[in-house]
Image (cartoon, rainbow, N blue to C red):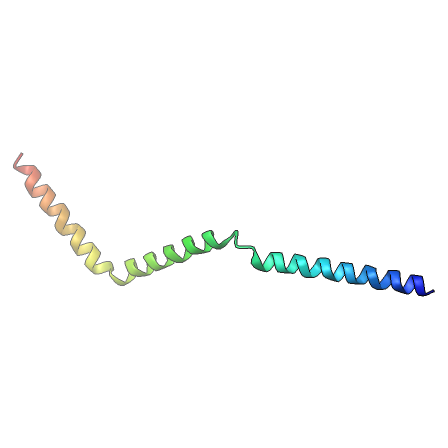
Length: 74
């Protein structure tokens, strides 16, 4: 009877130890961090475009009008 209890206790201990090790490995896993960083950078860029939409549009129009006026002289 004592052997069975001891064996059961050891089995539970090793399972819990394995579960704790797996949980620790999962918490230390940073394989998806690069994807999150790219998504955050894209969100910031989209936000900046939305905020400065009018200024960007005016700048693009100015640049293309200068290109068209100077291209006509060639």
